[in-house]
Image (cartoon, rainbow, N blue to C red; front, side):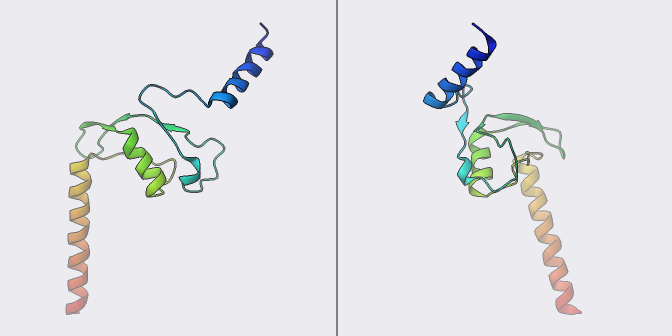
Length: 109
């Protein structure tokens, strides 16, 4: 079979049956993603391992969490997980404490 015919048959199969997803993947809803001016937005999400940039712990960014981040929260399509949950929580609390301190300093000033 020629490469051209093989390619055409593969494209036809995808049109008829949809793209095949890797095992454990969750299909993306492209209409729910934030506008991203990309020619190649993700069409599915898979669990992605990462290392926390604060504590160095090995974590996995779950496909379901990616779907929530990209489609519900409308996070940037090229955003990636970089901190584990405890480090994100600690960082958020530190920021809230700094903001509260700045607010109370303004009230005194």
